[in-house]
Image 1 (cartoon, rainbow, N blue to C red):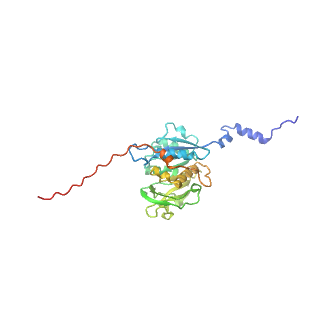
Image 2 (image 1 turned 90 degrees about the horizontal axis):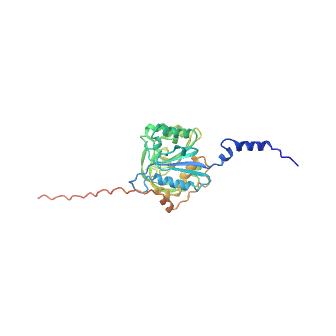
Length: 300
């Protein structure tokens, strides 16, 4: 009988299987993405700043990519911070101007900083891109840009049909929209690590001719190897109806998590009924009283 003699390769394979954390299994683990929704105002127009509805929709869209695990934080900050353990990317869709819950205490900022230092991806959507001046250092480190007193915001029409070659723009189709934008960010010297992806401004609308001042979506290859994606649009839930914009955001999340974006872009199919199904119920604001124009009284 021929006796079995283990080869060095088999010894190596056995050692890897017994290694703490099991490297072979870890390589096949799903990519964990944590979606953090900001507080949704109860009294407001349906769809306006619907951070929870948008995060729930992103969760469904990301589920169309195999190997993705998502965790949803429904209101500002998790009750158990362990939800961040093992995350490959964090997605923040929240209010800005320093109102972000993750900037609320030194402990929370320290928690996010440690994740950033470990190379975890950071995605900032709509007002989450605006860090107030006391948090400028965190803004530059986490997103690759800062919102300054010279920055601007507003609503205007723009058409987006010119995109640079980048993993995040794969399969992105043109769209036109009247969105709420933030622009004129301050970027690092020489745009180090920054790749502009989408532009929007009142003069050049969606054209790259607007230059760095009109950048409203960008990626940042951080110094430690981590990745960040920022997009200042998405003021209203109806923006998700644009297939090109959906793909840009989903591609950006996957790229930030270190997941290979398919050559034709991530799958992000959604019809009107699906998009509307994630709207958060709201109480309509009270109607403004009508002013009655007083007729001039003729002199007696």
